[in-house]
Length: 231
Image (cartoon, rainbow, N blue to C red):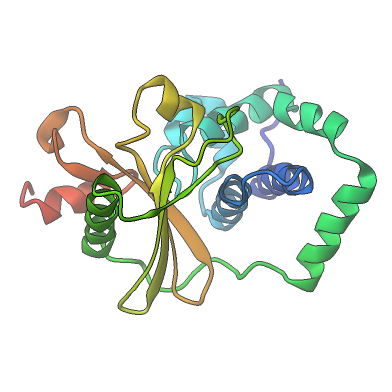
């Protein structure tokens, strides 16, 4: 284990580098974007992410926007070993030429910086309800995710919408954990932006505690309890 934990800048650079390699492989753009979003969140965090992970493990990152269970585990792997198996594998699959193309494109069209007003919980829960209703009624376009979809089947409903100055892209989670737990028709990933950088969150049906059975935004449980009148 390294003598001192990596800085937020180091961790963010790692996540951005993984995103570059995924983009060079022409992976699902939403998967690429999830790494970019997490990188921006870690980079701007006032907390020392590496120190938190070293002392309490990856589970302690639950409240960091854009850092879900999978990315928290990856960050923990990096903090503890100084390496990430995923990145080492990607390096074997991506040519330097393709990686240079991605980096050049980033310079020409840099991502918008994070920031801007905090999106209301009510708006996220409203768009989550609309998405699940329309998906259940088969009123949404279906896409074929590249990740965990060997048959290349178009099964994932996607919603693009605008509300009160916010733009949304919404879909069910297609992570390995969601598949393993049978939550691909429950966990909803909401990408949102208002012209000052994109963010994301995940809405789930809570399985325990006072919020059991209710739709909850991961990382904003306290606000959800107030929304439901439980505080």
